[in-house]
Image (cartoon, rainbow, N blue to C red; front, side, top):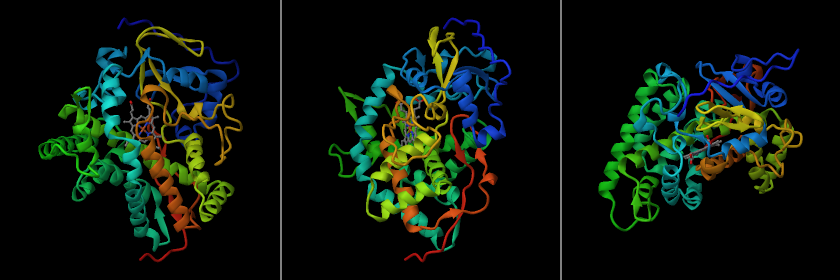
Length: 432
Ligand code: HEM
């Protein structure tokens, strides 16, 4: 694409310094800085910690428009980054092309074809049928710490649940799932960067999946088995006579793991943290669960996604041509990051946006994105989030934070927002 000179950043309002972004304080609580940006510089060009310059879009209406705008491509080939910097930015796709050709990195028509095929295998029905297994996994994990009276809810609960769940759904044999737990642990501890142990873990995971897909392909018969796993479903899925190639199926299995793992860890972690620090809302939810109701749980998990969701910034987009977002000119080749966490606190869209209201109606939050890349795993994420939170609060009714919440550390990644640890205490309960 033609390279254009970068657009000028908007002049800061006199007397109002732009808040420091990406600092330690920002990682702990980015919401005041986002409120400032929404008000004073709603489409704001900034230098990211990696050195790359990108536009941050913070108002709800602009965010929604940008997420659905076909001129903003997901393909990193449209990035205008000088060639010498390529591979150093951490922008996905500047790394291993083969591994990275997946839904979040491609545009129509390829995206349309792949998404249609995966949607045939990864159906809401398949997820709903998985409900009892998610409940079983949740109970097993809680059993392991319920008698101790204390736990780190990230390490002991939020982290293992999604990885076992997605492995089970894909059809990774149980005896191999602890390897995935180790590889995923490496990825979450050290962020998605391309270096050292993370790169090795990604490679091992990808190699394992490719081999598993190859093996399952050999084993498939013409008649689908009842309760067939998702990988077999992916191999079998067809649309107008088209199938996923073995490579495409491997990339798909990988993105399901990758996109569905840390996000769900953070939904459970951030969600539990928000409940524990809002005792009135937590009591309301506990009472409604005790009365056998699930309506507040359903609206509550949506509200937790809006209030402090797992995905702070949507994944990268790149302008394929000059365009305007929220009145700001953006040049072709410029990276654009839509700040979901800022949009979902926009007072123009949500009443009392900084208040956690588990029964909030009219809650069209952007936590799962919007447009053609809208989260494919939303039904699974909802199932896991609702099961995890309801079971925790029901089985450990006096759960509370251990220590001061000011001591909690947030992981400082660019895209995701989540806690490193969440120490809790409760009255120990005997397990059968
Ligand atoms: C896409 C959020 C869980 C699979 C997305 C996007 C968001 C998101 C914001 C769009 C990104 C963009 O437009 O740049 C979340 C949240 C989750 C969650 C908040 C948990 C609470 C999952 C799970 C899976 C999954 C459990 C699968 C097992 C995907 C896939 C895409 C995606 C495959 C790409 C879709 C496409 O490009 O067409 N997710 N996600 N996600 N998500 Fe999720």
